[in-house]
Image (cartoon, rainbow, N blue to C red):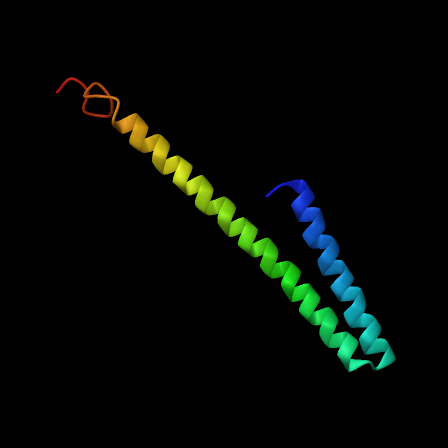
Length: 81
C-alpha cells in the first residue's frame, strides 16, 4: 500500500469522523450512523490492504528462500559435507 492509498483511507476516515460529530451535535442520528459506518469502512479497507501487503511480502520471502536453497549443494550451513 502506497502513500497515496494511506492518504485516501485517512481522508475517508476523517470525513466519516466529521459526519459523525456533526450528526451528534445536531442530534441527527442517521448522519451520526453514516459517519460511524464511513469510518469503519475506511479502517477495514486499510486493514485489508495491509494484510495483502504482508501476505505478498511473506510470499516473496518464501520464494527467495526457496530459490536460495535450491541453488545447489554448495549452499547453506552444511557446505562441503
